Length: 247
Image (cartoon, rainbow, N blue to C red; front, side):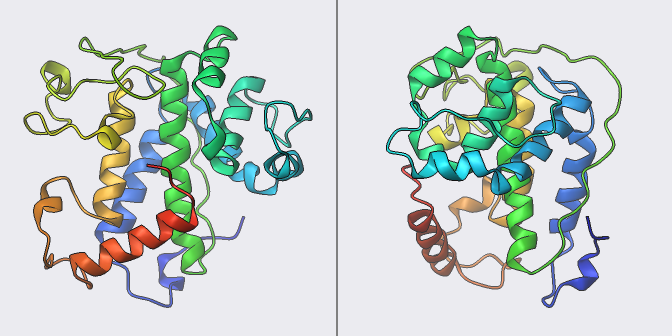
């Protein structure tokens, strides 16, 4: 991989963006709730491998992804279910089903481990796409750090939405009291809360690339942004449509 420097950018970049990325790389390398540091870095690598995986490209073109058989191009450092999940989230997320999530759970990829994996993949893809958009080399993945996973699971969990348990809107209390204020847990925010640190990681990156939770109530112009809120939402809506974001 090429040496990376934000100085290569043809556009000025706010200081909070590279700082958010630096913070994430440090957390990525450390043990998480359900994956070791080595496994977390391996998941990040698989999110990149997905874009050059021939099997993923062929499966994407298939009428049904669940009848198409083959093998992913991968590093061999993760269970097959984890490799498939990381690749599918990148290349064919629109056809992920509850049955697939449940089947993975039965085969050893627990919903907790799956949510942490989703958080890593989403964060890596967001950072990488920022670099690709500016024509910058991707940053090198960090060296894994030793240590034990925590197996932490929130005390307050609900199964009222989505394919995995989540912290309910009024459940951001105790260890989760920092996740959001009051009962403002929108579904898109709750999605990663089975692994609270996954939400915390995504939240910091989203605050730099888009807006913080607190600043989302400003519907006019944020002084730290070059474009106004209407322009931001127009771009976000267009990108979502192109990416076929069903949410």
